[in-house]
Length: 485
Ligand SMILES: [Ca+2]
Image 1: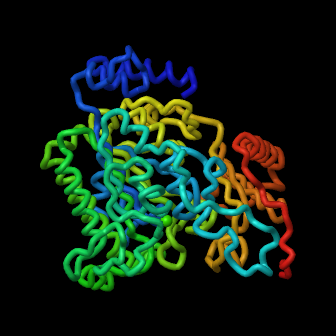
Image 2 (image 1 turned 180 degrees about the horizontal axis):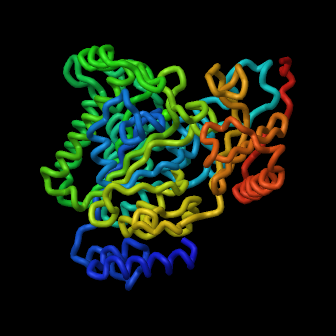
């Protein structure tokens, strides 16, 4: 944290929470060498982080879906703060997770995409992309390792996608419990038993994976209710394969689609996920833990274009257009976040590591490089919180024909992007092309302003170039000898 922000947070903590030395400590303001828990007598807050896979910005009721039914998620969001400009660090699964868990932008750890960075036909790829890393380096201090020092017991329940235990899975990266997490990015055998998941013994015939992960999450909460817990719940849902419970599918077959959302199987997967969120919230209430539990709801990348609709956003999963990276996000923090509030300030995955560290009162690990900023001030209603810009770096090819993409062969060609204020600039590495959008007036990214606002484009481009230099971001320049469009 910058010294200015540190002092600002301390003042806010002192004003708003005069009676709670815990809150003061949680704002990152160390009073003495004593741990926060000892000073306040109040237990550190539990953290429940619900992370949905491939859920689009408008795939929940609280973001305006008229087709999908998410009453429990909506209730949770209504009791907290909704972030309308929340971003993932990447338009696909593994890099989004690597950034979230490390608190670092892609160029720090090299996880840029899923599997190979050379996807699609070679003759259509002009450049040799930057090689991708598929596991998160063990030397990186993850969020679980960071808050473990403050006495947290932690579990990763669900999809991991950054390597296998014992070294690269959740256990290798500092979680006490791993249920269902390994290198796979989707349920290999599907959502019904048998799962063929090396980290998840099969349940009874007919068991549905989303329900099972909810059961495991509830079991973890019950087992550890007497100590500070960190539950990281990265659901496999609502990633493909589209498989759901028959009675729910039938329900949505009877329902009319809305705003381009009309897939009954996908809707049924979302409803099962929502039911799970409801059961977890109810369990927190039942165990009298809700008041001291901070719940996050977030997704790792945008909705898939031929399954759902991200309207009015352009594009979907796999693109750096808003449809690929803007996510539904809400945070419930009883006693701190005013219920029913909204923030339009851009926030991004890497912000959540320093946020959780601050919430828990854990020390930032020695020498830890963090690219994000804690959003605790935003959660406390401090609306003048801002930073200059946030960034994306995607030096890879992702094949696929999808509506909203820049061309018919790739969802994304190697590119980078920056958002500063209302503006967003995308730079394509094959040809140096730039696209500039004013998201305030043109959330659908239809009107490229590069020619009409050259100074604004240059300003954002400079920010992007400077950032790439700062984080040593590799840009592909080598020509592909097989290129023959
Ligand atoms: Ca995903």
